[in-house]
Image 1 (cartoon, rainbow, N blue to C red):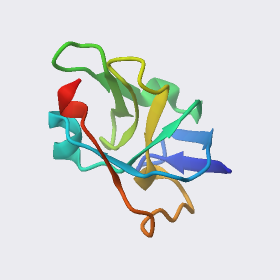
Image 2 (image 1 turned 90 degrees about the horizontal axis):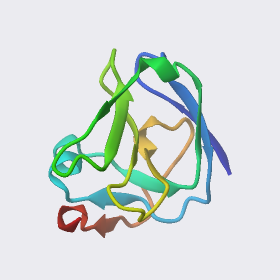
Image 3 (image 1 turned 135 degrees about the vertical axis):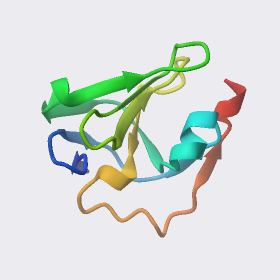
Image 4 (image 1 turned 120 degrees about the horizontal axis):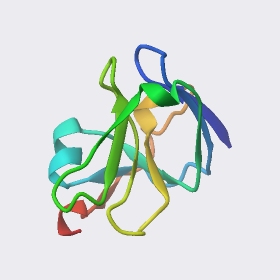
Length: 111
């Protein structure tokens, strides 16, 4: 299914396509503090405001976490290792009801 999403201030808008299967919570130090609900996707298309995204890296500086530099909302990340292509924040998607699906607990702290 194709989903549309945005940051809070609407300066960053994107789309992605995936089958909603496994909402995920990561226990790495960054993800646990921001409390994001993630989903793995193969591709993401930022069709508005790509220049409004900024990247945060930590620890081994391999994983990239992209968020809006205006409102601070996390949009997506790429992993520190080739575990999956992208992880998007389900909370940024329009019309996506994931709350009824059990969460997978991903051990990102071990990466």
